[in-house]
Every structure is written in C-alpha cells, then in structure tokens.
Amino acid sequence: MSNFKVILVIPDHNTGARLSDHLSVKYGVTVTVWRDIQGIEDAEADAVIIYRKSVDSLSSLEQIKGKIALLYGNMPVPVSDKGVSYTKLTGNLPGCVYDFMESLVGGQGISDLTWGEPSDLDLSLQPIRKAKRSVALFSPGGGVGKTTTVVHLAKLADQARINVGIIETDEDKGGVLRYLGKQPAQVGLDSLEETDWGNETLFKRRMGEIVQSVGRIKVVPMIGTLNGLVCNINNVSILHEWARSQFDLTIYDLPPRLRDVMTYSVLQEADEVILVAEPTDVLMDALQKHLKLCKEVQRFNNLPNKYRLLINKVPEREGLDPEEMAEALGLPLLGVIPADMEHYDKIINRAKFDIPPDSSWRMVSANMGLGGACNQIMPIHNPTNEKGTAKVKKKERRGLFGFFFGN
Image (cartoon, rainbow, N blue to C red; front, side, top):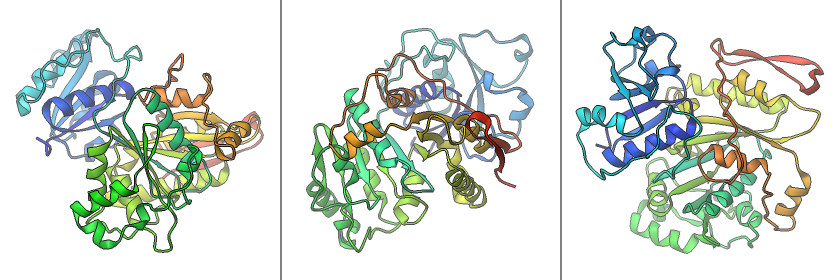
C-alpha cells in the first residue's frame, strides 16, 4: 500500500512522529505529519487524520481531499461534534485509529503495536524511534552552523542507540569527519563517475569503499573535487534507496542555497528539513526569499510543511529575537542555540566532541525524538501567522523592522 497516502494533522511533533511510525509499519502506507491545517486543502491524500484541537471550525474541513477522521484520543467528544459525519477516533493511541485504517486498507504487517499508556496527545508521551527517517539540514546562507548541527544530532542519536548515517553533499572538504575528530577522507561521494551512479550494483560497491566509520556513526564524505557531484535527477534516487537500506536515521548535510540537483532531490526526499540560521537581518531576508520561492514554484509548494527553524549562534544581547523570526516566517521554532565560542573551538580546532549535560543541543535532539537525555522537552513554537506578516524585533528592543512573507 505504499501508494496510499495519509496525512496526520497533529501539532506535537513527538506524537505525530510516533503515530506516523506505527501506521507506516503496520499498513505500509506513506504518512506525512502536518502541524496545522493551513494549506491542507491543496494536498493530495487518500486519508486525513486530524487532531480535533487543531481545528477551530469543522466547516474549514469541507475542501479537504480524502477520507477525514477526527482524532479525540482520551478527551470526550463534545456534544456539538456528535452530529457531524466525520469518523471519530477515541481512546488510546495507536489502537483508536486501527478500525479507521482497516476500513480503508485492511490489516497487514505486525499486529502487536500498543503504547500501553493513556494519552490526550500531550508531551508526556515518550518518542520511539522511527523505523526509517531522513532529516536534511539546509540554509539559504553559508557559515550558519549546518555541519555543526549535523554532528551534534548524529552524536546524540548515536548515544540513544539509533543507527545513524551522515551524507555530506556540501563541498567543505571533510567538515563532518573533521568535527568528529577524524582525518579527511581520500575518496568521497564526489569521486563517483557517471557510470557509478547509473549502475545500482556498481553504486553499492563504490559506496562500500567510500563510507567512513566514527564509532557507530557512518559518514559518506565529500572531498571537494573539481568535478563536484555528477549525478542527475534520474539516478540520484539510488542514493536515497541505499541510505534507507543502511540507516534508521539518515542526516543530509546540504550546501547553502538551492544550487544543484542533489539539494533539490534531498529537500523533496527528506522526511523533515531543518532550516539553520543566525539571528541576523541578512539571514532573515534570505529565509523569506527562499520561502517566497517555495510558494511560487509548484513542486516546492509543500516543502514549508516539513520545515522547522533552528536559530544558531545566538548572542546574549544583540541580534533578532528567534521567536519573532519564527512568527514572521510562519515556521515552527525547533530550538535556539546560544553562541559558545569555546564549545565550537573544541569541536572544530581541537577535535574534542563533548556535549555538556545542560547543552541546548540536547533539548533540540529531544524535541526531534532522537534522544538527548535532557530534563525537559522544549515546546516547539508553532506560529499562527495567518496574514503572513509580522515585525521582528531586535533584542532589548533596540529598533525594529518589518518582514513580509509572500504577497
């Protein structure tokens, strides 16, 4: 049933990822998680499961394509909802959605998936590992800390015993391996010839020669050849299939800006995309231009639905306010990483990769369901930016300016 598409509208990422995992494994369907219903009427899906608290008025669901079910969990069905025709899903997850899915696709796969605890879709749920998951790190500007983010997430996922692989497509000459304390590779993804990409058997053999190990973490490096990546849009899917066969979690380190076939392909392929930015006017402007491009190019229309914003290198006193940046962009704020030059120096220059117990990186990792052993999970900021306009203020309110997203 891989062609059967299901959309889950659930604001909490951990709950959405967990339910997505259950449904994709049990029924073999393609599941996409949305955090609100904005723009969902344009999406193509066979079924849409919507957490009831995500909807203010049920009349807003009339234009949605596909079979609709309302998910109540353990909260009571309001009297006003009892007369509506949509299927109502009540009780513990994931069992409360099974009858609905059975009526659409029938049962297959494993049948003993139970969570064993009541839930009203709140943060008390502990995330489970998604069977196969891919995350892309992207930014419309360079030098914002994409590679730093990649290695932190990989390290914390590895500590949570997740089988993780990193694929570099950014030609920064072995940044990932260097940050992880290993010498740059002699051969990398950009060493592959066109004939290697076009032959699946040859591709797998060549990848076996390229992959580097740093403990349990696997790295597919780039070495910065003059030719760059020679893959084309027709055969780059071989890389994605190979990654899914090798890793439970694949993290892509992308180059800045939409400048090559691989970047376009990974953004389309990845389950989620983390937009990394610094709190500056320049990066804010670049982010808005990128989102405007997504809005104008049909094949990129749905990309913002899997975007989350990570603000990195945040100074103590200056710079834009991260939450107001997220509000202006209309994107969920995944996390805020303070500027810490001593920590960066240890990683980049001294190859000492030590993540402190109170590090903000642990909170980001926990928000993504990748482990991290932090004491609390930071609520993901979900802006309700209906008009797509907002003002972004400097810290300490020293001046302000407006940013306008999409016209």
